[in-house]
Length: 253
Image (cartoon, rainbow, N blue to C red; front, top):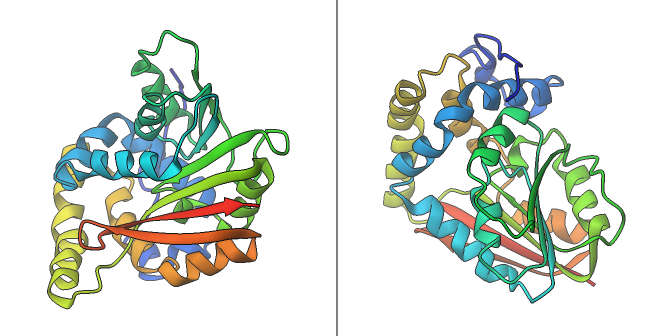
């Protein structure tokens, strides 16, 4: 297990009064934040998504259309939930990578796959330590908005994908139907930060950062444009659970 320790507070209320995505020190703050909440991350995901987070990941795996022998890279894998969902397919190899070692430490404790197909590696999504055209599927679930430069990460995804490879990006979004959007905003911006912080006993400000990072991140159409700008084609966006999150899919020609 890692011996790194997180500072008391990665995100103060004053700092989150501004757009967190514009901070030069965002990468280190994000790393410290996830180090602080790694131990309670899975529990908070289940509780505050009402169990839907696992369904979203299963849907993402289906959209990836994994074929026998495929090699998969799950970026910003966190504690490995999507990595392990991919392990239920007939893929040949699945690598889960993450910026925060403490999250990978938790993922390693959940590893029950004795086939040797699944492994974890610390890596920066903006500088992936893999050869060109190494994978058939690249995924990132609820992690692209935590990257300092999403365009740079998307370019890396394109680089390591083989021709015909599929990119899957699962990310939070805002529902388009006003009553649902209002209710979701009240829940994620008022209720969830309080209850999630209590569950995690968190002092890093992680659950203040989460709704702010979603609100200030690129919207669905902007993400689709970013994928096209990186050279991807056949881009689609599939809303899930009334649009609370969206699964983007893109193909490398």
